Image (cartoon, rainbow, N blue to C red; front, side):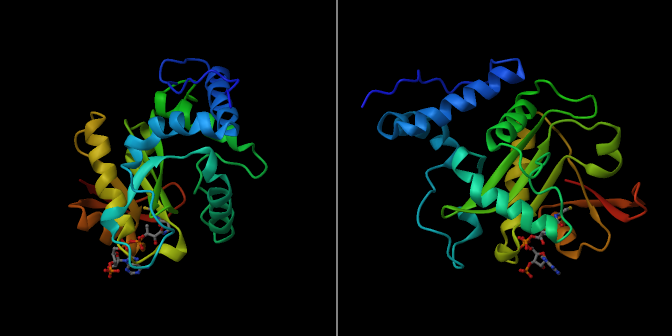
Length: 231
Ligand SMILES: CC(C)(COP(=O)(O)OP(=O)(O)OC[C@H]1O[C@@H](n2cnc3c(N)ncnc32)[C@H](O)[C@@H]1OP(=O)(O)O)[C@@H](O)C(=O)NCCC(=O)NCCS
């Protein structure tokens, strides 16, 4: 079968948002031509997946097998249902910037623009937004901000993460933060600010296990007490 769409997976040089969206749509169309597309798609993400796509998640899989990789077209169902489930539980930012009903490709374009720093709203900095995968299952997500604006310096920090309820207490958040810290260092960030709510014992433990040093506590704009750590 001949693929009618020219294979192009390099979006890093593309500036306008519309062209990023077009490129991502091309990827989607390519996947309709499975035979041709597989090689392209694999080349694109294989390095970032580190070849860890194995069997479906098992409770015994070690956190060391967790990989952070870009969200992909195939993640739509799992990611959107995770987003809606966590939103119903009060955590509204699992997929940052996602609104119910938003086309998945549009959201992928949104985070790709954020990753390459294109068309950023005035209150946003360049940031990577990555899926955490273990044994083929989406277990969480992590956000890595490569700079701090006023709000991030006060209460957001460089890194944010969330683990799906079914996958908690397996060490995944600790491994996600550990890998995210490496990515931030590779992206040129020195010391990293990581912030959690004062009463979020799980997150505070994760940060401390990754070497976080408590700078102190503060109160955010919602009046919630927070803990500020440097890693
Ligand atoms: C906080 C959160 C990220 C922890 O994820 P996780 O994958 O369960 O964390 P880990 O398994 O790496 O936990 C490491 C340690 O933290 C502690 N911990 C984790 N969750 C805890 C909880 N609910 N209560 C008390 N301690 C907890 C435990 O000591 C745990 O180690 P142990 O299981 O060996 O005892 C997860 O509960 C979550 O996504 N919550 C909602 C979103 C959120 O709060 N994100 C952080 C924003 S700063």
